[in-house]
Image (tube, rainbow, N blue to C red; front, top):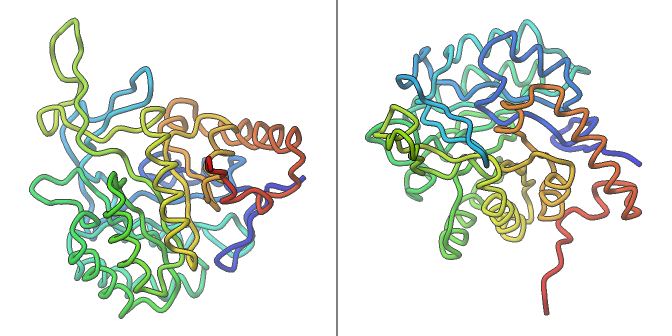
Amino acid sequence: MSLQVSLLNNTFANPFMNAAGVMCSTTDDLVAMTESASGSLVSKSCTPAPREGNPSPRYKDLPLGSINSMGLPNKGFDYYLAYALSQHHYGAKPLFLSMSGFSAEENAAMCERLAAVATEKGVILELNLSCPNVPGKPQVAYDFDAMRRYLTAVSAVYPHPFGVKMPPYFDIAHFDMAAAVLNEFPKVKFVTCINSVGNGLVIDVESETVVIKPKQGFGGLGGRYVLPTALANVNAFYRRCPEKLIFGCGGVYSGEDAFLHVLAGASMVQVGTALHEEGAGIFARLCSELQQIMGKKGYKTLDEFRGKVKTLE
């Protein structure tokens, strides 16, 4: 029985990786991810210059997940590029670099510099089109013209295949529209679904107060709250983007959750809130639980059931 995944000219021991935003900000985080049982890892969504992000408290663990409004705290593109150059080598666990510039031009400028490192080190770009935590800016992926502009700018300067991190959509028409834009860009080889469910509000009943400080308490939901939404987005894009891979993200705490993501169409499975709660040891547990489920069901590989979710006739 094998959890191995082969894609984007890489072979991964298993489909698991961190979600951008968790265990990915510092070299120590990235080394911990490299030493874990995960199949891969992704660095923190970066901007051209370092950012402090929003005031604290900006992340809160909840009974069914988490709420956050981080505001893109990161050490800046140069830091993650240097990590890729110094730490990463072929044969090591494949590294994804997440990028979230504040304009199409910022992303294009970073991509021009990333291109040579991607050639040399095999680093794979994940372009974050779904950062909801910057005041005054709508998410790029909720503005289809902006999304097309960003993807055009990156495709023009970046010679390698890359992927996009998407926010959740909630309307069938929006699945259709977003997929139509993505399908215009052959270099977009994978679609990561989903980023957090934007602008939830959690209120503490005792103090009658919101639980995070930025945006008057509004923040992105992660964890168990979002599993059904994540599965819907994974399956919607799996059906609509047959030439692209789908990476599942959202609500993965167990091997069963991961199995459902693959059944919905996911090739890789990212772990965010649960990784934040449990630490890097979670990956060994997820691998063993996923293998147990596959064993019970008689599956030898992930390919045997990927995207094979049944509908009711």
